[in-house]
Image (cartoon, rainbow, N blue to C red; front, side, top):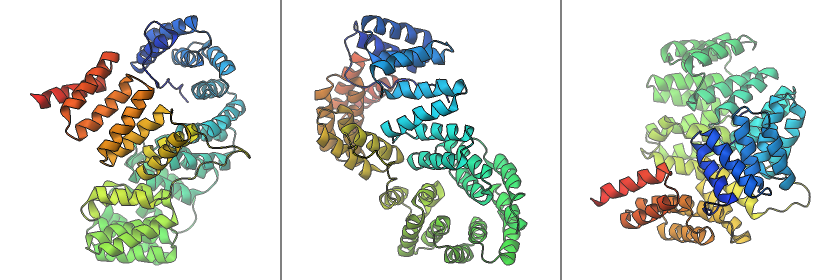
Length: 467
């Protein structure tokens, strides 16, 4: 695990204050200028020794610089604010580096309650459980991380490692296939072939299926079809073999035969999502759109996480209706949101909790769920500016510009002159072709934070449009 950096939030502070020096340190940290960041944070804690954010950021910067006194700063932050998320996260990193995995796990368990929508917390928790040999729990935590971020490469690696340690080789192969289909960096074709060969040698029965699976992952569809044909003949009750047999046929442009194989896989195991998702793709190519939609719904009902990931693959999006945006939106609306972890008896959802859940939904692309959670957050706390910003972003994505601008204005009332809010407001205005208003917002943002490269790029775009 690597130390986290601070994420700036709140109104832009006065420059010669503890908060101002802390903000300057955050800018330097984002640019990778650790020495300047540490000097700024040190000045911040000199001015205000009770500023927990500055102590936590100083600890993170010192850890990133390889200094041994970083954890001491984290402890100082936690004495001031026991639930400080950045300090807790980096404390777990320090404990892990010291080989104190059980203590790191205890810290991550606490973070799981405080920040349930952060996939990094669940991935790190899985890593600690794996190091302690608690593979069943590690596997569950990796699944939780993937519920929150389907494309989290490290969580996929941990999931496969856990399944191998638990001798669930067939599950490991499925995970490997899904990871490759998502196009994640790392072990793509060559690595998948090697790991597939390792796993196949540890699963009894039907070796031709594993040969075919490896050939299919490697893009050798014709050879894969021959091997998979032998596999389904030898084991006609194996849904995975039929699904991959259909995939090979589809790759060779035989949609009717592919559909028959996918239907056979779904009949053998109605809860196997890839069989339904692949049916939907082929049915759409054949122009049978109503049946394609029904197959997609059946797949989502079987295992929302797995089919939801596959439904976002570009080739699926291109297939359904020729309208990838409509398909992706439909898949997001159909997929139920991942449930939050259980809360302690007597605990109540705070506005910050709702905002955290909304952030996780928005990161997964589930705008409707994110909007509901942001609305609940601002109902519980009208002064939570970050929730107003999230709500504004959701309105902007839904093309509801006036509501978006109203939410941005509410955030700016709470955080006057915040460069980040002004930049995001300008982005929404640009989307509505209101270049003059966007230009004004960006000039204000850069007046507060001249180092904001993203705002500068948007400003240049506005100026080019106005010429």
